Length: 209
Ligand code: ADP
Ligand code: 5GP
Image (tube, rainbow, N blue to C red; front, side, top):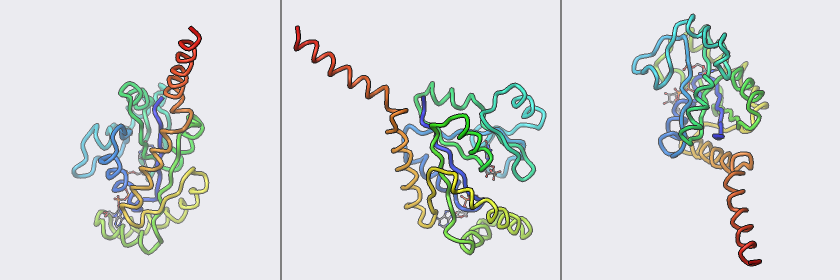
């Protein structure tokens, strides 16, 4: 079973930046490619950042029970296919999920071993600066995202870990440590530990013979 690490953050906190840094640096970790009904942004590729689908295809996946979790965010549907888990398992990789707070709640229910991480911006002022600096959104969108961040932030209490994206290296380092710790959880490491146990049993048998 792969380790599943779920990351959520208010828009603009730097989650995409932190996740790509961690995925570049950590072997054995795979990004879970979600399905979404939103349009691709410039530079986004189908099957890489997202599987871009229309609403009826999304509804079909959902009705067929093929989604681990799903949510409506800013008027678009987003969901994680169960197939992402199966693929990670087949490849022997751990899985990093980027989902909103509604999605994280569903994953927590369905996969109690999943580790959940909330990324916080250092402050309201820094979040505002980052949203403006990104140059992606107009003024009303920035105001909407800031208001949404204010509502979402308190959700951190339901996560296993809360990390602040102040210094990028520090934040990426913290997430890497969490992934390493997740890999050492007994639920994940039990198979290897049992194999080690068996070497002791074999040695004991040999001694007896
Ligand atoms: P999110 O995916 O959470 O919406 P992004 O990764 O797009 O956020 O980051 C928002 C903006 O903040 C981007 O312009 C990014 O370059 C910048 N940024 C991200 N992390 C940091 C950081 N630790 N320090 C300074 N700027 C950052
Ligand atoms: P964006 O459209 O900016 O890439 O993402 C918008 C929001 O949707 C982010 O909060 C992101 O975490 C969330 N999101 C992306 N993929 C999924 C998913 O598969 N499920 C859920 N529940 N949220 C997702």
